[in-house]
Length: 407
Image (cartoon, rainbow, N blue to C red; front, side):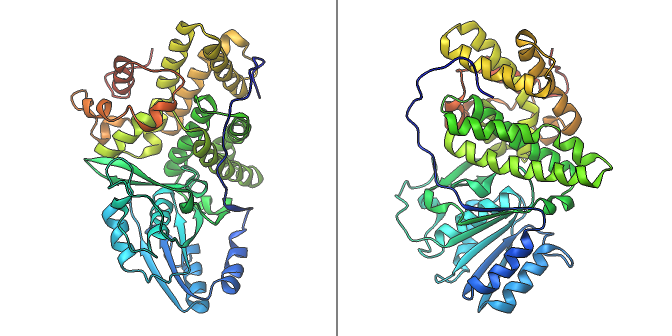
């Protein structure tokens, strides 16, 4: 799990965590707890289909309506914008007791931001990184409960809410006070998730694990959690696709836990160039974040490895050793020389099999990539293990288009 190369452990901090409840069917315990713990005003934010008849969202909404004084329900479809967050906040009473988010990463990010702003009735633009007013977030917040229904972003274990204004920016509203009080991880909720969404969000989680394991800001705690997450991810898709019900349940469980671990590791170690590019791509194009990560992961990993090999420093050797370990995790037959190219092949194979969609179908062309490069040098890119040149990043972007192929 760790490299034989050793060094003094640098200073690091580890962010607080929500109270995590994990288990197949554990959402039923949440229904029981809500009826005894929350009797005041509640806000429920879900995806558009989760409250359809027979779905868990309908049961949750009914339970809340039966045991609380007031329930407000909002639906979030697609990536949330600052305007949407502000509109929801204005409709919520300042004495709201708790905000519950039930859905994928976009729903949880919206709910997280709403919970942070209800008591003060302030605008998220007062605090949004890079484009907001830069005010200190020293206001009271509501409790937030996260119930993920996809296994991707790990938003349930992070302190940041990602908000987008398509065509302009994709930025984070970030503070320790935004962290969920509770995260209910029920892998059974993944069963109803469409496979193409499950694969794309799962690849996002895996990208977060791999990048946080190899980032400049990793530490022994994040390394341990990232390694565990990658171990859980390995083979999870195959188990989910099997005809064996026991294997399916294990696959869903592994994927759900891996995704939440990825949120913990990214919150404490940061990410890298894949997410550095995915941010501005998401700002300018309506491309699913998980698919963007999946298409770029093999390419960026290859360029990182090549650049590290050229550096020939002790630090670069330590990170190369980590990449080699990941390669051997997925194929134990590889020796140290084979592990690095083997890892790139594995990442390419995962993308081709589970996220075959090309980025061109979301509007990316050779002629409109410059804005992505202009907006990629801050944020996640700062944690990449090496500084990649614009030419390398541009080549990675072009290789996601149909007229190019990874050699």
